[in-house]
Length: 174
Image (cartoon, rainbow, N blue to C red):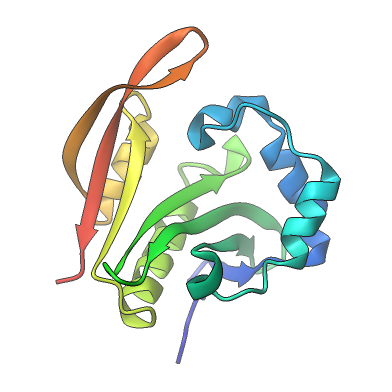
């Protein structure tokens, strides 16, 4: 049985009703550094994305899920990206939208559910993530779930007039 339900949250597929939620996230400039975004997204483009979000991960190489409360409040997003069937790996990205909902264990619970799904149901051998060296919260989150720091990409991202380093973390399915 596929379970994407945790104690406090569950992960669900994108719905057309998520348009405003995703539009707000994608156009919040304070979050752009996390996603390497440099331009805003229109509602039209996000609507088109939602219309195609039902496509299989093997076709589009991505799975984006909403982190939802049991009151059906969208709290954030968690993604598998660059899904590589041949090499049995995918990247992971996560965002809890509101700062009031961070540091409550919701991200840890969502990440744990996604790891289990990735290894058990998708049969992946490894997951990886890229984290800015000054993003202590994300480093703590991913290391708490067993991800290991395996490399440093120097001057990797350019934001706000400065180059920043980025760590590469990896989790192998043992």
